Structures are given as structure tokens and as C-alpha cells.
Image (cartoon, rainbow, N blue to C red; front, top):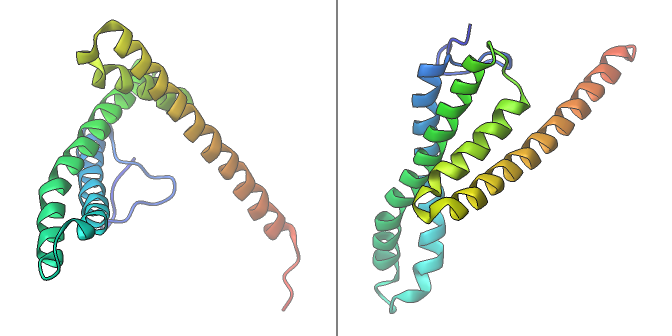
Length: 158
């Protein structure tokens, strides 16, 4: 099962799908808010006169961070819903194909207002981005597994 133990997830543990959606939305909102606050604060310092820089930059950052956090949460919520749907449709298979298909569907759904052509472009971009991410993390996982195996096979030097 994918239980959360004292707020810390183990390597092989994942939350089940209904809880995973809420968890991902909350995490993405938090990351979007924090990241946006710092970037907006840094970038807007130069927009205010001397004596008003700190107050103006804080106000700009506070105004922007909720919007960006909401955008991150929307993306994460759709992505996770599609991911859970594909896991269910594929009989519990949780692999890279689900992630890529979920990225494709999320990109298309978020581009809905741009018409069919915009949806197609958004879907392809979402699929490509998730394919690259899955390839990089898949390669990283293989390299880490090889490094762990090499360390485990060496006799300890004590």
C-alpha cells in the first residue's frame, strides 16, 4: 500500500490515487507560491524608487505568487487525475507510459481554449516534455542502481 508514515514517504511507497491527487495539488501549489514569490521579489526590486523597494517588491511578489501557485496546482491536479485514470484503465500498471500519456492529455486539456490546433500543439508539447523527463529520470535510476550494486559487491574495508 501507499501509506504516508509520519509525513515521510518511503522509496517504494506512494499514496493511493484519490489521496495522491490532493497531495500533488497541495505540493504543486506550495512550490509554485514559494518559487514565484522569490523570483517575483528579486525581479521587481528594480521597479521601485529608493525607500520603497522592499515594500513594493513584497507587494508585487504577494500579488503574483497565488496566481502562479494556482497554475502549478491546476497542472498537477489534471496530470495526477489522468495518471490515476491510466493506472486504473491499464489494470494497475504504474510506469512511464502512464506519465507520458498523462502529460499529453494534460497539455491538451490546458490548451482547450486555443481550439483544436492549439490543443494538438499543447498535447504534443506535454507528451514531449514528459517523455524527456521520464527518459532522464529513467537513466538516472539505472545509473543509481548500478552504483548501488557496485558498492554492494565491493568487500568492506574495515
